[in-house]
Length: 435
Image (cartoon, rainbow, N blue to C red; front, top):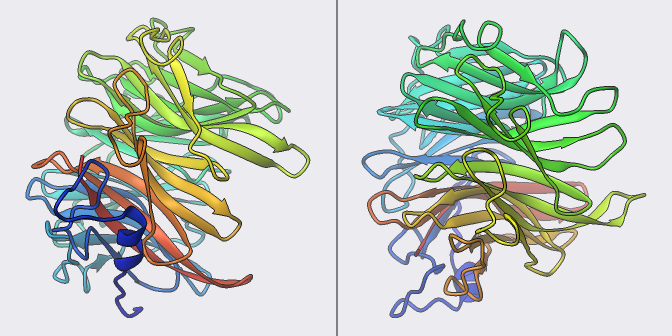
């Protein structure tokens, strides 16, 4: 295990931190080392998602890559931001058995005193259950893991959510029956058993586009109070660029015909639009965020991406009270952004996180806050967002949650040290911001 490292000074200077006059967006000075913690597991540990339990403990989910082997990792932090060394082994928990070819991305949800971590490998999804001490739970699935075969070509960005006694998963893969790259939604019980009444044996395939070269990808999921699933991602016709997609599913896994056009809403901003995450407001309106991109050089794939957000009414139509005719983009400058996650804060303002690109080897992690109407909230940070670093050259936020007792913003992320063009190493991070 890599020696534990902590970095605080660089990010505090970047923010112009003033403990006497904290403003929304500032690091919480009482959390960890001036607002954040960065810890190492192996050679390249990243943080993709996180959860906060009822007692205020924070769990981050990600992967570590050492010697070419990818291992799912969970990390636990105390409410003060320090690593909880009693969790698993030295603060980290890993599956008892790791399959080969794990993709470097993990999603996480917590329910009561259990953690459910989602990863993918080859043609399968793996859901692991742990308790809050980091102990694998043998009662879940088979020996602590539920394995679901969905098809080859799984896109590595996934999502998992909980409703009642069920877990829902958003994914995408090549449909074994048709060969089409489809949206995939999975439902299982909290015991890890697939729900037979959902889709075909717990797995539901759907699509916006068909044919060779069509791409349909789900990367975000939320449950409505009635148990219907709302999922978000992107889709592209053969030979064309991506648009955001939002889908709603009935309890049996079929697309809901009362939502948008046959259960699917396509949202376009520009040339290539990567819908990422979705959340549902208390009145049922749906918010989706991601990266809205313009081509710089289609031949090389170079793009410039902005923060893109949209809001839908409960019937799937765009909400004209949000942005311009239901959608909006925000240019954060430099070399653009990659949006990875967002959460609705206690006032239902979207708080969006991701990576802000400076040049090839340098980036900051960003946190942006929108108003409920989609406007950039200039009262947050320096004009609506903050850029932070966690000690090294390249930084990114992977996931975001609201800290329940205070309404503060908590993020999971990564800081990467570029040694040379072929060598780098990374630490997984957690941070807490005023809101």
